[in-house]
Length: 123
Image (tube, rainbow, N blue to C red):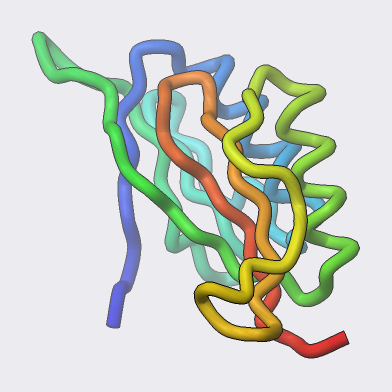
């Protein structure tokens, strides 16, 4: 359904560095960089954009859940987030209240967004 999503920030360099680090375990990287905005994704696609908040615009405040191919990728995402300025909002683990194979981790990025990595595979 979604083509892309954009997050606004007042700390562009920090957010670029944070997202480069936490997206790497999920197989994503910076695909486009226009200086004031960058697109992250996989080769040929960049569905996540981080851009400079302009004027009086506030930084974004969203819950963004990203797909992980494995539970170990969720674990690595969580470790990378904490090592790069993110804070814990729910360590890696099963969330059976969502469904029996829901394995996720939640962090707060440097701007306060609730970022999640989730694997739906039974393992």
